Image (cartoon, rainbow, N blue to C red; front, top):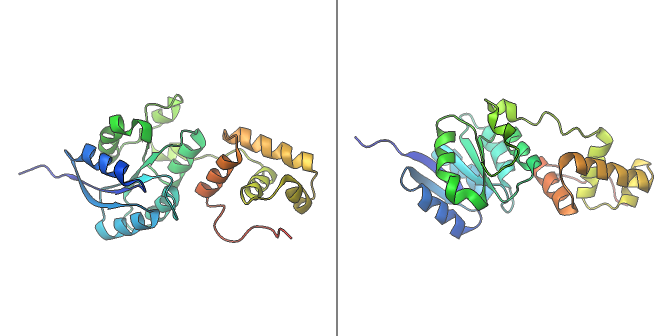
Length: 221
């Protein structure tokens, strides 16, 4: 009798890359669904109950981490392996905090994806070997990967959240009864703690945290 194949769904909004990954996995994996959005990934997991979901972090609409959070709430959650171009440690920690069991960089996926799928399928934790900070990979359980707190103060988090919504430092200062200098200082400290350096990265962090869902936290007028 032939050995059972690993049943996987693939979710990535770049079809050429997605098909390339499917080809790499073909020797051991049955791709039961191939989709291009986080919403479709959640639906595919609910429909097919695969052994594993391979999710791109950045997808239109529902991003991969948000999709992962929904999958983790299912009665019988599927183990998830994240694919990403993002190499900052903060993104990796967010993914594991949401329930990921593995994280593979797209630039090295063609060398590592099959091993990553095997590891996660067998109940292990996989972290792309390209990362310089390999201490995370030595932790023995997913719980050890959970973000133990970003280290942000409540004020720093509020400033960063408002900055992600597009408020200027002056607007934030007016709303929080701070000086513009204090806002800029808190934003700089928060960014340093998280290892992010640009507004684009602040926005990406906010997206993965779910900060940008729902209403703007304060009135801009």
